[in-house]
Length: 114
Length: 114
Image (cartoon, rainbow over all chains, first blue to last red; front, side, top):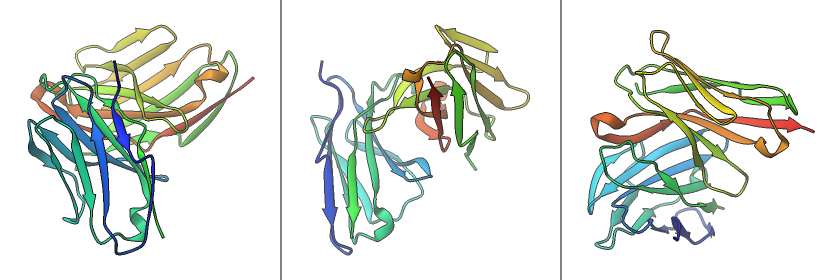
């Protein structure tokens, strides 16, 4: 069974540009989560989507946005990129069975803003 | 504020020794405490998890100890092996309340010397 897949693996953008990151969850998983992993800061929660709806967002500015498609895949958009947005962006998926089902992570997209 | 504090930041243990990583939380509504293991270039993977109604859970060489009154939990790796060298993250959520978002500690980089 395929795991969580993220694309692209690496992305280099210039400050002020927009970045689009994509995630395909494990088949049957309806919840998708996005996390930012910046050096020394651990994993910071960005967004949670379930059944196509945004369920919660972390303490990030509105230029971080996303959506979940009918096939449960998801997209993270970062507008007006800043240098400090450089990080590993991780997507995870889980069955939405009350929140205790295991969250499976993808390998991430390494975003570099220059 | 939902926060999980993890220590130490890094840890060097000799092969065969015991690795101990500690976490403390503030939100008493947390009811699900997983530990994730992350190897370089990979996404985090669930290692072991515990609910607050038990004080200890053991899976192979990995043990979680939980102290509800102190709001602390720890990961013990017995007979540590070089293959255990990775970054470990503790996390917490209100999973059993249906709130799925995980709050992570900042991680501990473990190096097991041969």
